[in-house]
Length: 102
Image (cartoon, rainbow, N blue to C red; front, side, top):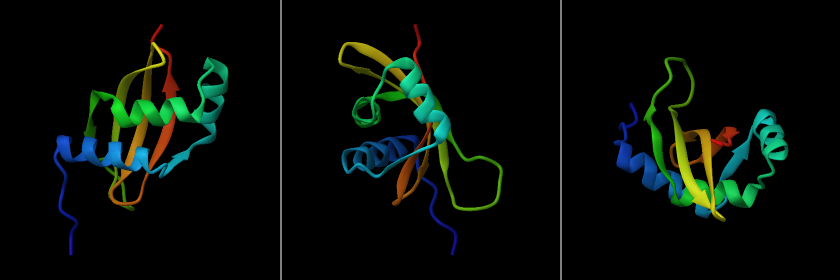
């Protein structure tokens, strides 16, 4: 049976909940960008838990698990952080990269 598609608001609500539960995975690229830009995992999780979309969620055109890719922006510790990530509903968020908009 096909999974029901989520609205943008439902995706955001789920991203926030999973971030608060620390159900977040990290690509190697994201970890390298975080180190390069001086951000830690706690800051990125806070961005996911409190930010808003700057790129609306979309479903990539590929086989596999249903996922929603998006970019979210948040103010954490006085700094704006942009995070590109993917939501696998009811499972986890995978952080793809971290962008310092300065």
